[in-house]
Image (cartoon, helix red, strand yellow):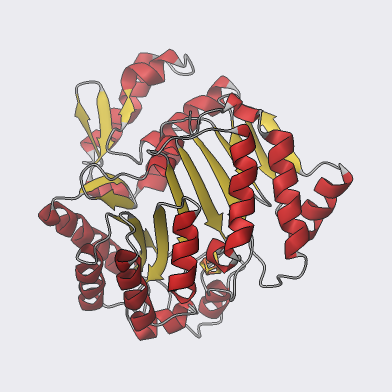
Length: 373
Ligand code: SF4
């Protein structure tokens, strides 16, 4: 049994690099919440989830919702699902929304893990990213989280921006590892189409990201993680031992999940469906009973690709026998493809299992596309 995901499609500002689905226009938020509650009531049987291991409020910026709105979604979930005290209930929060009142309200309704969008402690970097907080806000937010008695929080960081020197990346990591967090998600800055960042780079007003510096910063992170004794269990995710994120880990384990809200995806082992990425249309269609999602039945080849796509990113890697069992490619063909990357020191074999080396992690997207059918 996996998880329930709520996509909260609102943000206070537009970060320069972001291509997630969100709007800064919060008009119609009440109707949106009604629609999300309605969707949950209509879709709770998808994936035949009954007992949940995790609930995740992502976005967008879930922390900009009034706490009673978050609670109303949890209350609807309680009508259809059960979960025990070990269930991980995460809320993504930006530092500017983290204050005593919100923290206490979130805790009282059962949120037991916060994922903080810190990204950097370097002001120049934060300004370029168009974040809505400064370094002090982020540090104060984390102090308050600890004082309020939360025992689990994740720090989101971005590396490889043209405004982040290697020294400053080391400074960000020193702080994050010692901040009391039990988990860090570190993403390489990616230049996505249709973002402010992309426009600025195309106009040559901002420098482009530098692959060599991104690689240096990633390698530093792997060394630091090992030195601190952390578990770097997925390309972008590391935790204190025993503190892996349950919700995201279950995506990588191919477990079913139900996603509620505009742009949210759901998966039941055979069918994948994704909701319309338009707040107005999502709300109107749910309220009028019109279609608001697209779905597809996964073929065996899709499942083979999906297995590679998700598992290759983890320290559990991909198993040769599992790949063979899909009967999409024969054993010799699969082995030959994998050995090609072993010979380049991008993959290593341990028995039946292939995992990415550090160099391989830097080229994971390319390796994945080469292995897929
Ligand atoms: S707060 Fe998060 S979701 Fe919103 S624009 Fe910034 S990066 Fe994107």
